[in-house]
Length: 122
Image 1: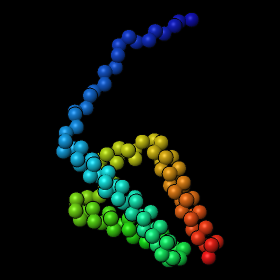
Image 2: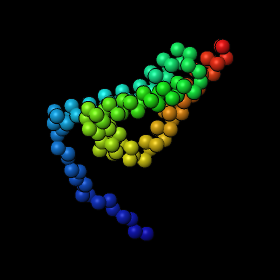
Image 3: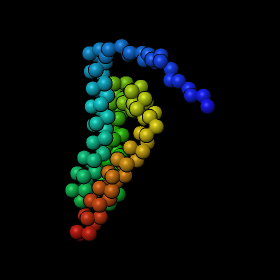
């Protein structure tokens, strides 16, 4: 029986260039636009529910709010946050789809519970 020895050479990883101040600001801008897009749906949804606009209209208003924020971003920046290279790398990770599924499932359960409670109270 022959035992294999571990290699004593170390793998050298390439260090990336330091992030400049301009790149940090651009990443922050992208994250702000992403947060605005995501929260606009929730805000429009809950405001229209509070105003008593039925069952389907809050989802429609939330979608319109998200699309309008993305259109405003496209007008101001000339591109949309979801097509940036950083997000492409993030969404390319193997377990990100599972995380998004869990988050959106939990969010959907919260929204559905709110709609059911509102419909039972009427």
